[in-house]
Amino acid sequence: MMATQEQIDAARRQIEQLRDQHAGDLIALVRLVGDGALKGAAGDRLTTDLRAWDQGFKDVFTRALALLDNLRPSDGTSPQ
Image (tube, rainbow, N blue to C red; front, top):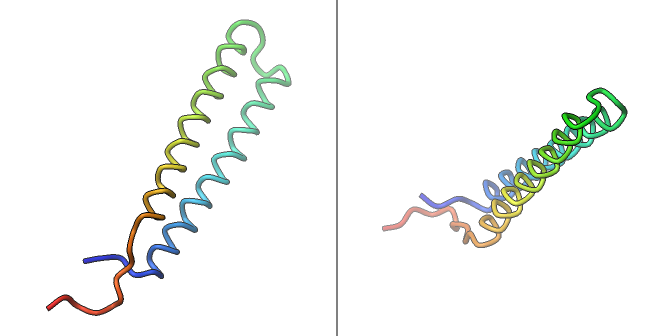
């Protein structure tokens, strides 16, 4: 069964919502660490890890949205 345009649009909105939520959560974590919640080398390593994690998730969201762009929606009829 192929996805309808409405299903594709709903998936896009969900992915965009998750991407935006992730960005906000990560910014909050980086600020927390940057403001001194974890100091020294451990804080620096955590900040580096958070930035790498952020890039990895950005790549996943970008790939997911690209996959949606390549989908051809069904016309809503059943194949015969």
